[in-house]
Image 1 (cartoon, helix red, strand yellow):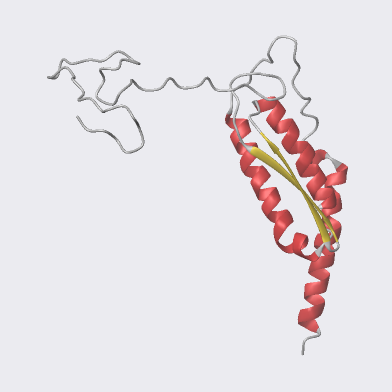
Image 2 (cartoon, rainbow, N blue to C red; image 1 turned 30 degrees about the horizontal axis):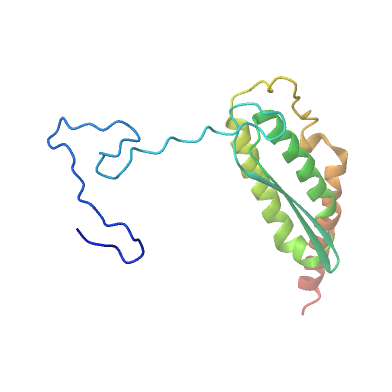
Length: 172
């Protein structure tokens, strides 16, 4: 027997059954690794309505204000209905307010929109579910492309095309 350096109790040799028929019940101290496989924690339900199945993914929004930027994120898990509702709300907000600084116009807002597109695809693959008793799902609302406020994004996009075209044509 040897004494470990950080423990006052001596280590004892482990005796385990031999052969291919040796089986160990979960949590058995005779298993070769000490204990059986840990039980998996149950998958949490939607953070809004408690429905199952739910996907743990983050939805993002961005707001650009000339030199200041504001980032928002909402971590899952969300069910299909609540996830799509959150994505529609935060994507519409990003399309409205995300373009109003130079760095946001070029990099951050497009990245945020792509991130939310990936999230939308993940949530859309989930089957429809029912909320837990006493809770309600978020209303999905209209799709982003049918919300007039989302088309405000065309203003900075048109401005960027105009500015780049002006730089190219007057650069000679």
